Structure formats: structure tokens, C-alpha cells
Image (cartoon, rainbow, N blue to C red; front, side, top):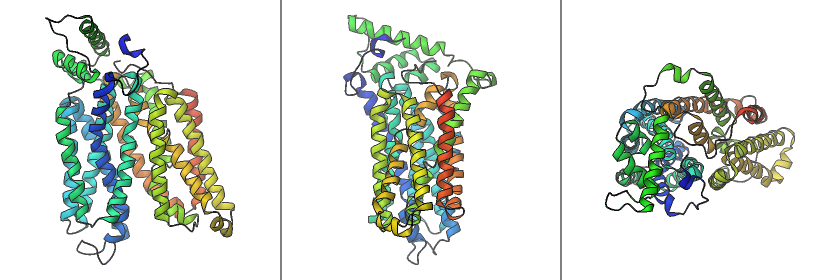
Length: 466
């Protein structure tokens, strides 16, 4: 074990972590851009369906549903494509390719003549986003020290959430043609910014490029490089730290070919079973669908406040929850935050269901604050654990040898459940009704709380080298 920093209580602002934090914030420019692309849809649909549509004709409700859901199918494709490329091309080269589909998405929106342009654009945006969810969490996890890995890995969903709010606000107040002109600048900035980042030391060691791996390790840990003519005690300590790290990585079997036996053994199958439970809880608890259909839910609760205003408030509360998760995850641990989030989310959804089922219209209209409070509570508590910790826990549980492919499989499963949840929730809300939808989601939270409470180990401080 690398003792030089692993046991030190350092601030996230310490010199040791400087390039880890800068690199994380830099690569998540792409995640922010993806969030803006996701947020573009809701304010654009009324325009696209009206007589003022910039397309050749107004789009139908069926076409609008495909414009919305194709990003999920694109994400599934992106998970698989980038999962296969990640170990072949490396983390950094894969990060360059993330920007291309996203830039094409904004170009297609600007040049759209009919709805097929939007279909293609949303699918490409999904490929970029699905790739982000595979490539960037692994990159961030591999460059981070154990002490701050949870905080840095949790930032992904914070950037997505901020991007969604930015996308919602910018699309609301900017013209249809101005929005893509501004949004396309972000992936350009991202491409320029990541030029200065190094490939991760783990991947370089996997490829046998030991000298480059050592330089990369010193870069991300902000350590002085060892020079033959300058054998100070500090340089010697840095050299020993890298050699220990190198031995741990190589002992994890990362240079060996991956085979079926690496997946089909009892410990690994248990990990995938827990990750599958985590993915089901993440989506069927309503954590994603909740934020896509917030306006519909406020209309169902018959609040007298503007539904879009309430949606922005709930979005802001979601960002606050994720910021709290970033602060707490390396202090409290992954397990406690996740279980607290599941329990609180289940109670909040149960409360929304009971409010809709048993409260009179007069009570609902007279207590606007209550429905908003419950919705904000679910948004906050979901963002404290269920939403941001999925990347952290999945990557920390998977063995180093199959981490890239295993993460790709898990993210592809997540994308499938996103597509399923986005199809199920409107059918549930407008079919059996909002109470039944909330009771279903609360039940998933309860089942997840029991299973993960019994079997999920704490991964805080775990070495990612094996």
C-alpha cells in the first residue's frame, strides 16, 4: 500500500491534489455540454410543435417522443463503443473522440430542415453522453488519490445537473438558431483544454510504457520527478511511491488478456449482481424520470404556481444535493450516503403519493408549499446518494483487470433502464395515476435498501490497483 499519502489527512486544496482537481474540472466541460444538450429539449418542444417551427412543419407528439428518447438509444451505443475503445485507444484519445458527436449534434440542430435531422442529432448526443459515462469516470478514478476519489468521481452528475439547468434557461431565453452557436463553443474549449493532460498511469503501465507512466504519476500527484543528479530524500520518496504503485497495478493482472473466467467467477458475479441492483434502484426509483416529468407531476398535484418555475427550483435543489454529496462522500462513506438516500427518497415518494390520493383539491391549492417541499425533498435526497454515487461504487467494486469492459456493461445496462423508465413513467402517471407511480418507486427504494443494506460493502479508501 502507498503509505506516503494514503494515510494523511490532506485538504482537497492541498498541492498534492492540485492537478487531480484541475484535470477533473477540465474533462467535465464535456459532461456540462452533454447536460446542456439534454436540457435543450424541454423548452424547444413547444416551438417545434407549433406553427412557428423552424422545421418544414410542426412535429407530432409521436415524433417528439422519439426526439426525446433517441438520446437513450444513442447513450446505449456510446456505452458499448467507448467501452470497446477505452483499453485499445487509451483514456486520453477516447476523450478526444467524445467531442465529435456532440459538436455534430449542435450543427444538425442549426441546419435542421425536417425532424430526421433532430433524430440523428439526438442519437449522436446520446453517443457522446454514453461515452462520457464510461470514459470520464474511469479517467477521474485512475488519476485520483483514495482520499478524494469519491468527491471527484461524484462531480460528474453535478456537472450534468448544472448543464441541464443552463440548457433549460438558455434555450428558454435565446433564439432557436443562437443557442447551438453558443453551445458548440464548449466542446471546442474542451478539446483545447485536455491537450495538456497526461494519459493515466494505470493505462500506460498496462501498455508497458513504464517511463511515461512514471511521469504521468508524478504529474497527477504533483510530485518532483526523479533525476539521477538530484537524489534528494523527497525525490527518493516519490520514486519509491511510484514503484509501490507500479507493483500493485501489475499484480492486478492488467497486462493479461481478459477471458470469460474473469467474469464468470463467484466474487465477480456477486459484484455484478450488486451493481445491477444499484442500477435498477437508480432508474426505477424514479431518480431520472422524476426530473424529466417534474412539470407534469406539479400539474397533477394541482399547484397554483407555474410548473416551469417549480421545475427550475427543483433543478437547483438537485444541484445543491449533489454538492453536499461531493463534500460528504469521502467523509461519511459511500454505503451510508446511499442507504440514507434510498430511505429518504422512498419516504418522500410515499408522501407525494399519499398527498395526491387523499388530499382534496382545496387542500392542494391552499398549500402550494407542501407539494413543492416534498418534490424538493425527493430531489435533494436522491441527489445525495442514489444519483451521484453510481459511478463511484461501480468503478470501485470492479476488479482492475476488467474495469473498462465491466464499466461499459454496467453503463449500457443503465442506458437501457433510462430508456425503459422514460417510457414507463408517463404511461404510469397518465394511466394508473401519480399515486401508483410513486408507490412503485417507493417500493423499489425499499427493496434496494434491504438488498444493498445487507450485501453492499463499503468501498471508501479502496485501492484501484487490483
